[in-house]
Amino acid sequence: MRSHESGEMYLESILILKEKNAAVHAIDVANFLQYSKPSVSRAMGILQSKGYITVDKRGNIDFTVEGRRYAESVYEKHHVLTSFLLSLGVDPAVAESDACRIEHVISQETFAKIRELVKEGNE
Image 1 (cartoon, rainbow, N blue to C red):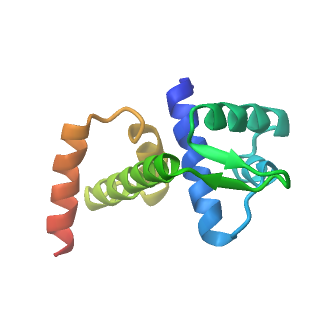
Image 2: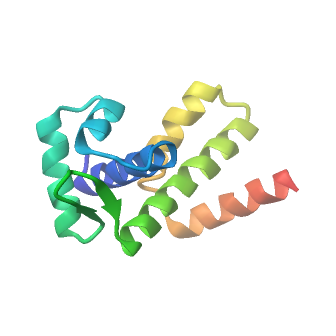
């Protein structure tokens, strides 16, 4: 898995967890992704150094403004792509899995066109 893709997966996971719980810690991310705690701790350090998250003394993970924007962008791609694949008749589990992979490599131009189609289909 590429580091860019991995970082996006972590940011998306933190966003999902923050929607459920106010406080998110590295152990929550590890459990959610089923990754080892050392792997998650390393990733959190990288995301911190890139300015996407902050971690306080108690281990609470928060987004920076840029980090939240990035996480929301990845999350939006996931939802739009899943909806698009479902509209094509793809099995829900396959659509979810494929959307998760596609969201990291799709061009902004292609994504914008798919988002338009999905929006039109929902109107």
